[in-house]
Image (cartoon, rainbow, N blue to C red; front, top):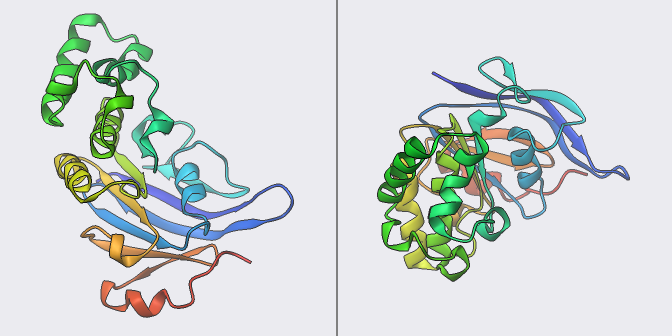
Length: 227
């Protein structure tokens, strides 16, 4: 069983604003964990550190004992706004981009792209520009592009924040497709946006603690940013 681990991670922005304080927890393959915290409370910063995009001021992030710097391709990050991570002209090209960067030969590349287009119900959209898609469709395209690298862990930064109910259902169908393959950490600002999770973590004052779902409402009464 694979494990993504945050060990005593702390982070401060230039100027002294401390965002994360001694964050320690683990995410295992096959589980979906909800990370609940106030807006501007450090959730996005934590996910970026876990994905190896920024370095903590203190502490370490590892995947099965290897530093995140060595195992970055095993962690995928889906942003709140999918427009921030799509650059190709068509859906098909967006999914293929990660394979091109890895110099995958054209024949197996086409085969992999076809599999992902089918798996995430995107075949009819293959020649469309991502700019013309609905929010749910964009997030499915972004998810398919991430799954090209077959990550062990998937980090979701409030991925349904801009989605209406039909688009959210579209996106959730995509998550159902990958849930058995990787550990998922889903950041949400409030319990009403929570998916059905195996565990719940609360980010409060920059620290993370695990809370039973039944106790979540009381745990969130005093949630605040790290002072």
